[in-house]
Length: 325
Ligand SMILES: [Zn+2]
Image 1 (tube, rainbow, N blue to C red):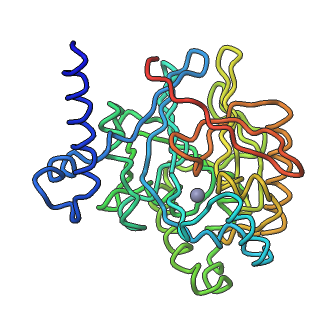
Image 2 (image 1 turned 60 degrees about the vertical axis):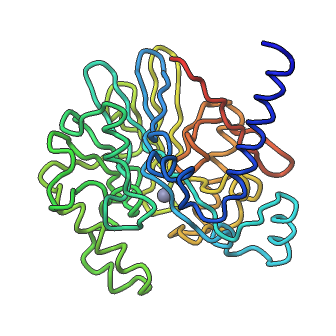
């Protein structure tokens, strides 16, 4: 290619980019097709030993930044936001559901929020289809806890089990907390819909539901680890295959900057806030010491990374995306 032709192409590309950036409304011909196509399907494949794993997105939740630090001194939080260039007041967090295919098992860890929570989430079925994973073939759904973004996807829009062939596993303490009939009358009004939703979902799969205890092996290589506080029975998991380990941190830390740098700052959604903060520091210490590959449900897509120490706190080091398996 001649220099002038290359120059011409480069300037044409620059002009096209400039035009795209200056289109005032995304309704023009140029952007209409791009909008129809939308984003790439939300799934990401990786291996843990012999198992083929897939992170499948359920979409975004949009959370006020203050919610990640409800006990923080406002001036201190403001200085932190300034230092970290956290300009947006609302954080579009991820919802990274894990699928594990071991050859003879098809396992889902958490199952998104279904169609009744928020418009920005509930995309799991669509992304699962794009990933070539058949909901009817899933034989185990393991729940970290019963918050809407993790368990409201148990039932489909007709209130039938979304995974008709699956056994559903949940921690014994978690199950006892949410299914307590008096719970709705004891929680703040803002939490009552959450309680009703969890009770409806868990009742809808009651005939296929089993509870587990801390340390129990739930499937070959998949083990439960109590991480109470975010909810009273919140659980993390390890999955091991052929000597490789993945730690599934669920909602132990929910913001990639705030929750790691300042684990003592309370998350508004933490049910037992002080216990959650202690659990957060304990788990982060363990992850930094053992340099464990981690999948965070709310970490930046696709949610894989490692935790390192940083001063009195920690830092999330996102794993680089690998384009071939
Ligand atoms: Zn969550």
